[in-house]
Image (cartoon, rainbow, N blue to C red; front, side, top):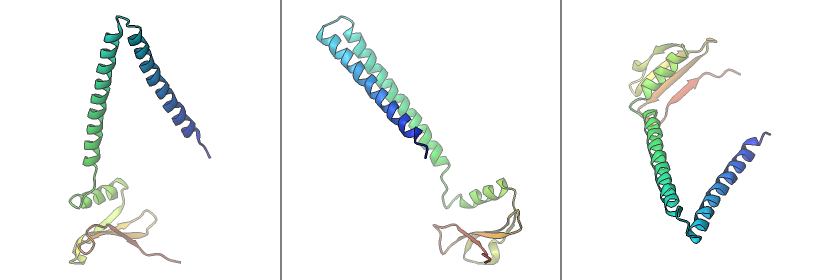
Length: 136
């Protein structure tokens, strides 16, 4: 079992903590000794912190918007299933009219000839049903 990721995470977090505490300690020492450049350092660190928070917030908002755009809902589930079928270049038959309780139904022929049925039913609107015949 490879646990290099664990050691990398621990080392990174430890290094980050050392840098934060060392910077804080240097500012405290400079303030105690009343060096004249202490105030500019404090303002610079404050401005850097605010900029880092702002950049993090903007990046998080962008990632959240991208995740929302990719979300599958009952309004776009049929489009997502069609995209899946088309991206794998599978043969399919739209059999939506076979049952009045179906919102949509596709019979998909896999490359090996097996068929699966992908359907979204009014009876189970929160589920996507994928059915196939199992042979033993």
